[in-house]
Length: 326
Image 1 (tube, rainbow, N blue to C red):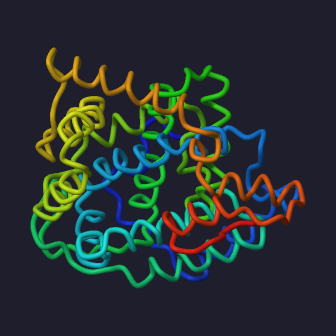
Image 2: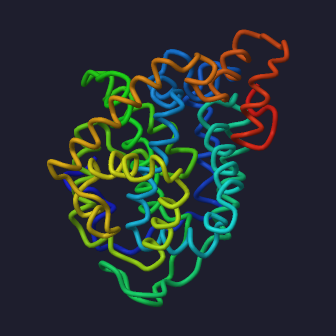
Image 3: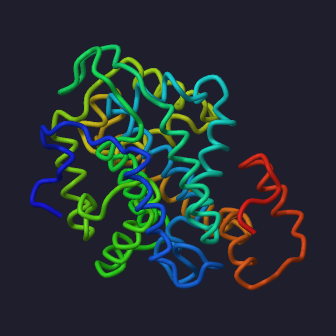
């Protein structure tokens, strides 16, 4: 990767066309050793980090905060998704797509990547207000490489950080392995390897550089979604859990979204929540501690076709269907 990430320069947006996405979709197969296993597999760091239920879902909430500070993303989500009118359906659709890419076999990965590109192709419009380098009336489009990269990196960045907070620390070698595996995942969205951080140190540099740049900014749409998401948390744990999720975010993100910031009081509150979540994760039975798609993928690889009713119920709750990647 270049010394300064391409995504924070002042060049024109890089939109993905039908012709440009095709080499990425066909190139996915080049990463796959066993089509039945898919992009990653049981020995991958990508499965190891993403399989943990608490890490995956809390990481999603955390990464969304970072994404909402990108005016394109905040406006696109506000105008084109059901996140505020039917958040459960919106979440189920997201998990269906992403778990299919992470845990599906090669055929499913390729089909879902194509479908996701088509969905994103319909997401475009104009910004309603100035924010950062962006001006009111500027065109936005979901299939734009730099915006896609920010969504992609923040999603796995947040989960890796939470994994280390709630599960166990990772070595530099494991972090770099995860980063290399993430390049395969990025292909599903049309993000070229030369745009992608190659090591975890480059991931950290990329996130810090974007957060300090004028790529991000404060928007009414981002604030509205942030407040809505916070309000969906159970009131009994809302303040403590929200503080835990926010105090570790980069400071510009906290400022743009009026989030709790690090302070002795907030740090103590976050530490208590961290301890509680670690205990909960330790107490959870294995079937609940890991996301359903992980269990299904493991059964698929083993050739186990026996029906699992608990897994079906969990899938119905999380994605609205009894099975996904088996």
